[in-house]
Image: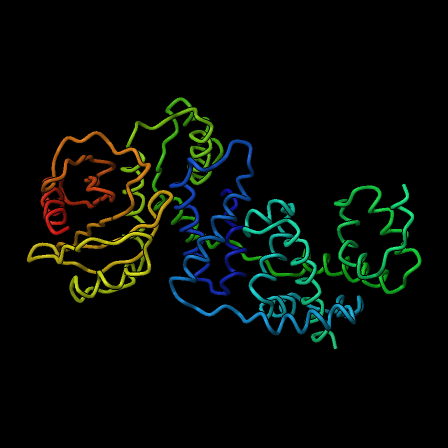
Length: 158
Length: 265
């Protein structure tokens, strides 16, 4: 099934909730079908679906009026991460999947998004389109996100 | 080039380390980064951490596959908003899952191989949106305590002013409302019930939309009535707003509800 698994994985890490992730994917496909006229010839279908899912997530969040993870903590940790580079390679090698996932869950939404989209293999241009920001913003956001993740993983590896 | 020979600092290099290893930099910048790395232990350490983080994420970060039940729901419930032309359907089915077929059909339409009739996308969208309402466990965000409760709830949530809401009657009960999207724009979605039947009303800005040819009327407004995949659809325009009413009720019943709605606004 076209991109359903990748979309669900993305939705799961965004929402951190199985039921909400399923709703997101379902709504994404429904919106994609409804918005077919906006799909540009030659553009990447997967990137388009991810963008719709992200927009759907934002819409649902606004509707639910939920609070996003506060970005202040990241700012502090980013700074520290930039100074000490976070976890050492030997620490990283000892980590298991659950610890990585746990560390991911403590990142801001923007940071998680950047890491997940990068992991899916999207180009910086595609990521920028999905996130609705400039390519330069994607670069710096991804760099900070990875630094923050390394800092958190460093805590697990201690 | 002279710029290639200049010294670069760690602060400049570090954001570029991973991009250099992934081939995302131009030759001159990549060369500068590598030259710096060759003589900087701190940045070498960062490069190694970046590589290890990539490996960790790719190999150990759990990936969640879509549950089979979700895939089945996608197959069963997503309406084929646009159907591929019959001669292409056979080829598309060989692709496998119906979702691929649906998305493929999207691409076919996007490529301009099939153009729906003017105004008919409004009808197709109405059915698709109605199905989402029906399948959703909690379709309304505001439960009805009467139109005086529902209508104010939309204030500030829409980019247009919602007219007076039909309060329902003995036959049709107003269940509530929610904000959604209709094609490319915001919409007020209102749900009415008659026994076990659900009727969804979508109210949206009409500007720039091509409405289907009218063949009925609801109240004072000329309307289009269609029957699509077992659903009755009534679409009409009143001033700057468009209305789409969908249900599995028969068309006469739905036109009656449409007349009540048009009369209230």
